[in-house]
Every structure is written in C-alpha cells, then in structure tokens.
Image (cartoon, rainbow, N blue to C red; front, side, top):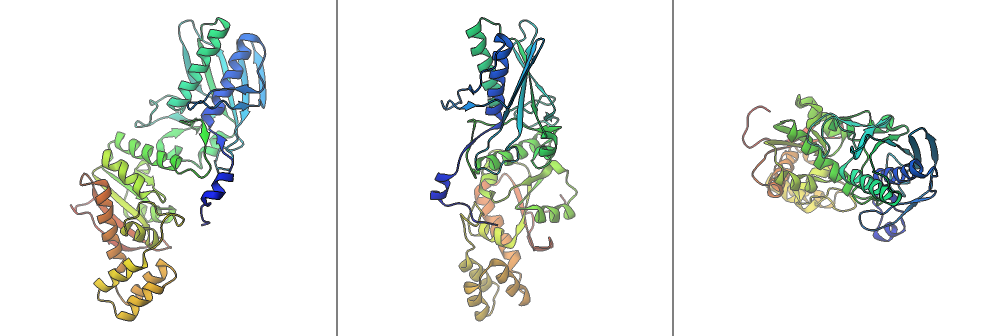
Length: 371
C-alpha cells in the first residue's frame, strides 16, 4: 500500500464535488428550464458553507411538463467510485400542494433496511442533498412566481454497476448508488466518508436487531471471520484502518458482542493504543512486541531480534518458530485497548489472521458462550 500524501502534497490536490452537489445543480438547471424554457449553463448553486460553485451542463432536454439536466461529477483528486459519472435530474410538475418529492431513477438505489438516515422504501438520497434540492426549488419558484410543487427523479448513468464497489449492497441499498454529501465538497483522501460509512453500517446492524457484529481491517480477515461465524452480511463492518473511529461510535451506540479481525501488524498497532492503523499515521511498536515476548519468556536473542526486525510479520514468524503465542498476547492487548475506547457496554473478542486468512492468535469474549 502506498503512503498517504504529505501535508504539502495534500495542499496541491484538487477538491471535487459530491453527488449531492451535482444533483442539486442539475435540479436547479432543470427546474429553471421547466419554468422559463431555457437552461442556465453554467448553473450556480450555494453550498451549506456558503461556497458558490458553477457547473457546466453535459445534457439537457425538455418535453411536456418535464425538464432534464445532467452534470458530470468531478471528484477532484479523490479516488471516488462516482468520479466522471453523469448525474441527471429530471424535474416534472407535481400535484398542487404536494411540495417537493423525490424518486430514484436508473442508477440510484432504494433503501430496503432500517437504520439509515432515509426511511425504508425511499430513494437513497441523503438528508442534506434533499434539503439543498428542496431549498433551490423554493428559491427558483419564488423568483418566477411558481408554487414549487415538483417531482425530482435523480439518475446516475452506470450507477448500478458502480454500487457494487460501495457499501450499498451490505447496507441494504439496492439498485444503484447513493446521493451523498454534507458540505457538497469532496476533499481528496478524506477519512470522513469511510468513517461515516462505518457509522451507517453500525446503525443498520443495530436497527436490524443484531447482537453480534464483526469489524475487520480488510477482506482477508473478513473472510476468516466468515469461516468462523454464520453472521448475516449486514453484521460485517469494513473497519479498515479506522478502529478508533469505529470504537468511539460503538461507545455511544453499542451492540452486545463485537469481533475484531485483522492482520498481525494492524492489530499490534491497536495493541499499542493506536486508533488509526494506517502506515502513514501509526507505526508498529517493536518495543511493545519485544516486551510481550519477554512476558512469554522468550530467549534474549529473540527479544533483541524483535527490536531490530524490519516488519511485524517478521517478528511473528520468529515467535512462531520458537513456539511462542505472541499473536495471542497481541490479541489480548488489542482487546484491552479496544475496551478502553468503547467502554464496558460491549463484549469483545480479537482474532489475529495471517496473510492466508488463517487465525494465528485470539483473545476470546470475556463473557464466553457461543455467538
């Protein structure tokens, strides 16, 4: 995995716009055309923090009672799955007094599970984009003396395929991507979107009454946990490097049982008290691993070798060759550190996996019993 960019490099990275911002701009252009017959191009909107970006139209069309505008999403330098997607807003007249209503067109998902900020059965258009579109319809209607009763259908070209590379299938959002954004701006390499997805995953698990969830650092450890437990898909949280962010959220929104799965290097960082497990923001504490080896009565050369080793997996291999349960000790320390962050409301276990997905260390649930 490559290192994250330095602070100086980040300043040079270009920010982009969320799907919510693009949908709002497309809605503004389409509704203006519905009332006036002409599409503003570019179209300017106001974002929640006062920014006023302008968007060029990539598509425009009109028919009786309906106008459609499309904008190509530019996510800047962020590796966003929807970068380059065509976001379409089709605006049609609603029944008098109906206000603004939303529909999911092709490529936009529909919510099927409770726990998300949008009700079951509704288009996967999050609250802030809904508010932005509603406000811009109100403002345009006021300028042109209209009632503002409209139906907004949002579509994303290719969104059904894009959604396969997001959390949406696991969260119970079917048929396409979500229309997201709280500020309207995509900040390159931002952690916030991933952490927000972790929070939503926990919300959905809780709303579906799950008593046991599993949070893993990657696909190998997740597959390893799946071989141990018959949990529903919604029980699996793609924690990635954000153990601290997940555990802090669980402190406020607990579930009874949590399995944490990960590789030896990642979980040794959690054992050392790091909540962010990324290589660019935390390093393996070789001193701690040497200390744990000493507790296991390892010979002095092995302890000193651990202090000089190149990688955590090298240290694990040395311990395994000596018949020492270092991975168990790392799992125990990681469980203790997770408990400090999340509090006593949860019962934890931590499982350490090797690169092939085989469990090599484990700290069991304190309360025992089958999952």
